[in-house]
Image 1 (cartoon, rainbow, N blue to C red):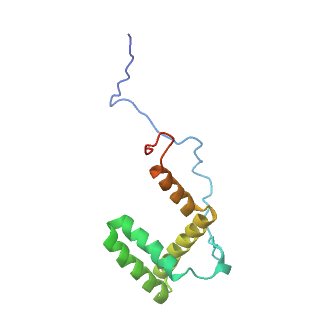
Image 2: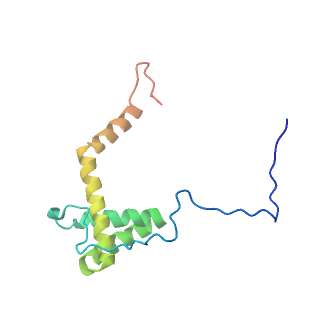
Image 3: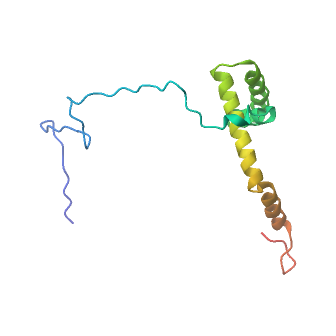
Amino acid sequence: MNINTFKMTAKDNYSFEPVGAVPPSAPVGEAIPSATPETYYNEDEGPPSDIAIMVGCGLLGCVIAGPFLAIVTGLGGKYIADRNQGPIGDSARALGRIAAAAGKKAKEEHLFSKLKDSVRSLFSKNDQGTTSK
């Protein structure tokens, strides 16, 4: 078996250029923000409910540090969403909108009924009279 190995030495002069590189003389475009910010949610629905804000913030806290922080971030997120109109309040309301959208989708897909049916099928008896695994 003949394996060719290439050994780099200090004398080798290599340059790396990205494929499709732009010449240095090309003009640089600048991003200009639009006058009106884009929104990705339906503003007709109004602000998210208090429960949706607490669930969204609580889930984030639970993922980060467990159940104690879930309670703290859920209650704190509700407080911040009511009192703060800045970016922190906006982020708490955004978490509430995400939780509300997830809840609405779960209701549309009958997710709770499917979960109950799958758990029930785990404990139901099959044709031989034994529990299914």
